[in-house]
Structure formats: C-alpha cells, structure tokens
Length: 540
Ligand code: NA7
Image 1 (cartoon, rainbow, N blue to C red):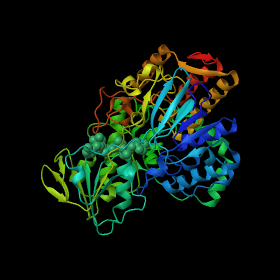
Image 2 (tube, rainbow, N blue to C red; image 1 turned 90 degrees about the vertical axis):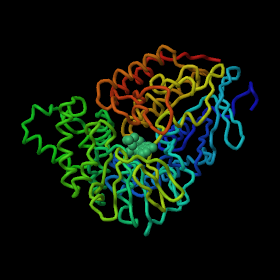
Image 3 (cartoon, rainbow, N blue to C red; image 1 turned 45 degrees about the vertical axis):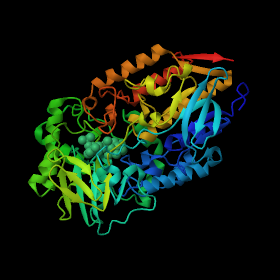
C-alpha cells in the first residue's frame, strides 16, 4: 500500500472465533471495507483447536448462540443441554455460511507483527507468509485461552511416544486402545478429558498438582419438544442472561448462608448439586463466594460429596483441595469425574508428594519412580488473556511495544483500547468485562460497542482515536478495586495471570474485570452516550 494513500482496508480483524465471526457480521452490515485474518485453516477459534474428547462448554446451550438474528435462533437446534465441541464448531460454520462471511475471511493467515504508522494513520500488519497489509483500524479477536503453555520439565522434547497439549489435539484423533496414557493437569480441560477417555485407554495415570473443586455438569439430551419450547422463549432467556452479573442464567440467591437454618441450607445445596451447570457456583447463597466462613461451610458440603463418590479414602484425600475454597478458582464441571478414580485402570499421582523431575524418552520420572507411557497429554493450561497478544509483535506510537507496556500487567481503557496504540480495539482483551462472563453474551455486547464506535468514526471522518492515558490508568485501578471484593481474585489462577509455565514480571493480579456485566455495560455505555469522552478523536 502507498504510505500516504488509503490503507488496504478500513478494518482488519484478527481471529475468526466466536468474537471475530460476529465482528465480521457487523462490519459487513455497515458496508465497511474489511478482512478477517485467521491463523487456522478454518473458523471456530477455541472450538476449532480444542479437539480433545469430552470438550464442551459449561454454558446452557440455549444461552451460547448468538442472539442477533431471530432467523438463526429459530432454525438452529442444539442437541444437548451443554453442547459438545463439534456441535459448537458446526454451529459457527453454519453462521459463517448463512451470512456469507467467508468471502471476508483469510485462513492460514497468521499475524506476526503490527506497526502503527503515525504519518499515514494506519497499521501495517505483517503475516507469517511475508505479506504486509495496511488498515486504518485494527481489531483483535484473538481469544483469551489461545496461547497454550506446555510444562517446562526437562526432557519434554525427548519423549518418543505421542505427546501433545490439549489445545493442539491431533485433528485425526487418537487411538487409545490398550495404551498407557498420562494426563498432566486437572483444570477444567483435564477433568473433561480424563472422564471421557478413562474407559477407552489401557491404563490412565493422572498427574495432579493442585486439586480443584469440581461439580456435576448434569448434562443430557435436549429433546425436539424441549428445543421447540426453547425457541419460543429466547427473548426471556436472553433477558435473564442480561440481568445477571455473569451473563449466565444463574444468579446468586439473595439470602446469606448463615441466615438459613442448617437443614434448609443442606436441602438447597443438595438441589444445587443435583441441578445442572454453573448453578452450584453462581446460584449459591450470596455470601459463599465473598465471605470466607460461608465459603468454608459450603466447601465442607462438597468435600462430603467427593468422599461419598470416591471409594478409596486415601485417594479421596488427595482429590479434596486444601489451599482454596470452593468456587474461588474456576470450577471444572464434570461428568462422573470422581468415579473415574474407582476404576482399576486409573491411578492418581499426587505431585505435591512426588513431583515430576523429568520427561524421559519412554515416560515420566517423578521423585519416586519412572513410569512408562505410550501417550502423554498436557492439560496444563494457557498463558491467559495476554498470551495471544504477546505472540504478535505490536508496536505503537514511537515504536513502543505492547509487551513492554504490559510488562507489569496489562492496562487498557475499559479493556478495549490502549493508550499509545491508536486505532486498535482489543475486543476480547485483558481487563475487559466481556471475557469474564458467559462468553458469547459478553462478546456480543463488546462487539456491538466496537462496531458502533467504528460506525461513529466512519460517519464523522475521524481517522485517529486513542484513549486518554488517565482514563486507561483509572480503569486499571477500578479493575483491581473490584477484584478485591471477591475471594476469586486472591487465588493463583488464570484469572489473576498466574501460570507456573511462564515467567511473569508481576505478582498475580486481576487480568479480567470482576465488577460484573451490569457495571461494565454502564461504563462502556456512558462512552457511547457521551460521544466517547475517554478518547482523543482526530479528524483528518
Ligand atoms: P487451567 O485451569 O489453567 O488448569 C491447568 C492445570 O494444569 C492445573 O491443574 C494446573 O495445576 C496444571 N498444571 C499446569 N502446569 C503444570 C505443570 N508444569 N505440572 C503439573 N501440573 C501443571 O487450564 P485448563 O485448560 O484446564 O482450563 C482453562 C480454561 O479453559 C478453563 O477455565 C475454562 O474456562 C476453559 P495448578 O492448579 O497450577 O497447580
């Protein structure tokens, strides 16, 4: 592109997952000149990559689809209460085809660098294949759990059998028959995977560092009658999600735990345990996630459940978390997970007792023994939220890099825009409220906000925007203040940027917004209503 002519595009979107697809829809509707650059060979993002058995979302299916098209809602039928990965991938393909979004998408187009050009007021976007493309506005939809982090044990590359991170699950599938399989990691991913393969493998050895509090998903089929009924209730369903802080159907019970007589409390908890999805986490008494004493009481209830389900008391001991209370980290939703440990072919290795020393060519060596394996699966999590940004070399005003700017933790005004990085919207980025909720619900609002902003800029011929430094700093402060109110923010987890497999220059702190969807909606809505006072806007 000519340095002073029009850039190649008005808008470039990076990523064609749940977020990028809806961005494409909105940009197409407004007639923008845009392209979506996707590093994978097809659309889907998370649902394209995570092909491991058992992978599914924990959102009620009817709350996971896009809400923007009544026609789409009426023609799509979910088959399970919590749809499996492949169904969600199929759904996203359907959306892209239905709205002809593919013509605006490029696949195997991996962005490696972006450089702001102050003279031409555009971004130069560099691709792995050497191409350089320019755009006035740059929108990232690169996912929050898209930079997998395998462990750094010695010998990881020496293993002669099959090994992979769950995110990079072999597209052709894996034959587990008769195989000796190791799974390292017991987060939401590990828990899904372990339950799904335990009866397919020869033997399964689970390497657990810190146990999590898991709770039953209670999945099941959606009958055609139920789906027909759901279709008549979509307005009500989305209104309900809109009214909760998390964008899910579940909202905290207005009662405090200690106000409720013990027997009634117990019955309520039994109902939650038998109920489905995140109800047990987000629909509990209102003090369970904020008051330590209440949290301890509920944790005892879940501990009893674990002990009832696991036959060997010594194994149950290892599965009960000691370092944190229920729900203060992400609750893995499970389907007969605890029963897996009653199987003869399954063994739990507690890494707090016998840590892994190395991966060898034939297996895993702990401080106690060497165990041979055919397959090692790393369910060891992600460099969450900022990891995807670090993979791309972003250079803003005067060549300042995003990596340098975020060295002590990410900052971004409303989690959407970064000072010194003009004309960039970090749509599913750090400190954003939309990524801490039922993802499609939060993301639809963020995309709508961004699309409305782009429309505003186009209408007025504004070709440069940048958030005020002070607004960005204030938002960063506000995010940390909100996080202090909940127990969640005090735990080491991906919500606080913690990951043992990478080096960080900062102590764990909130990297997503914990103030709830309503508060977030108000904050970004005010910007729209008041003509974007948080931003410097420049007309050519
Ligand atoms: P998580 O939730 O970050 O879990 C990663 C798991 O892997 C967790 O149990 C970790 O133990 C364990 N881990 C990580 N590194 C190691 C090493 N080096 N050795 C042993 N064990 C390790 O990632 P998930 O993929 O399960 O879930 C991510 C999100 O995806 C989830 O929240 C859902 O929203 C979807 P630790 O607890 O750190 O001791």
